[in-house]
Length: 203
Image 1 (cartoon, helix red, strand yellow):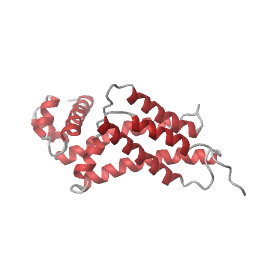
Image 2 (cartoon, rainbow, N blue to C red):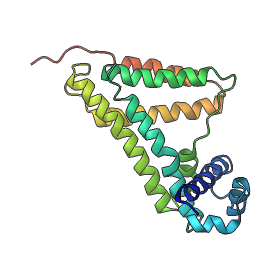
Image 3 (tube, rainbow, N blue to C red):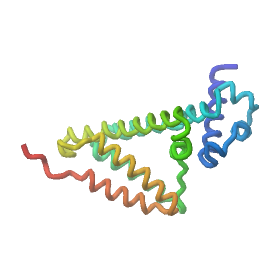
Image 4 (cartoon, rainbow, N blue to C red):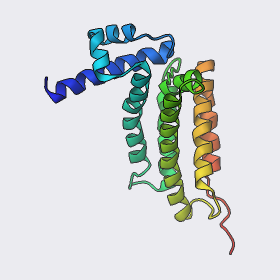
């Protein structure tokens, strides 16, 4: 079997299994359901994954590595200033959800966090690693904004990035509960105020 075919089958299992696990939860999704969704024999699952736990860890990387790359690309767009990169990224997301009659958001990382963070250290570590990488990407862009004079010199960019990331996740959760993108509009309005150029620092 060629390497490309093997990788395609693994990617198929990861995609189908993550889709199921996001909606049913970790404990509500069995290996049998995963392989049935992928249309493969059960033995093939264990060719790629040592266990369901190992599958979840690999699925997190499979889903979020491309998203982190897109996030990093958006926040390093040379045609925009660093402050505008952040605002533009979140504006586009808000528009995306606002266009839906009833906004839907299914978060694999959030689902696993709530269900497994206390019970499974490998999954918890993978979740934290992904979240830290996301915050680091945002912090880097905010540092560029600070260096460009778009934020005050004393701004703690790491803390600000973590605050923005946490606020966004909270807004998404409220959107899911409400069935409305109103919480995202509030987030974006506050983000624009938070990143608005302030009074210049005085030497």
